[in-house]
Image 1 (cartoon, rainbow, N blue to C red):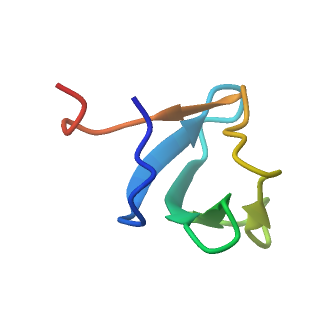
Image 2: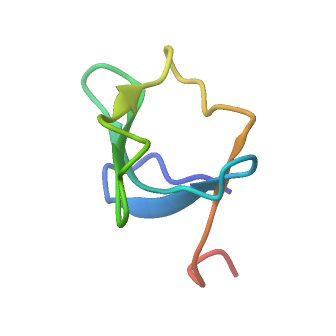
Length: 65
């Protein structure tokens, strides 16, 4: 289950294990990703396509019960 209410949550890239803070922009209907932690390789965040959560990202945390 992926949040679409605008509140931020953490997600991890399955390939690089990089952690991102993700929130859903309700007005534009897009997910916005901001890198967290050691960002030597990842220089900036990115925005997903319309209503699409990337396949290589997985939500993390304990809120998904």
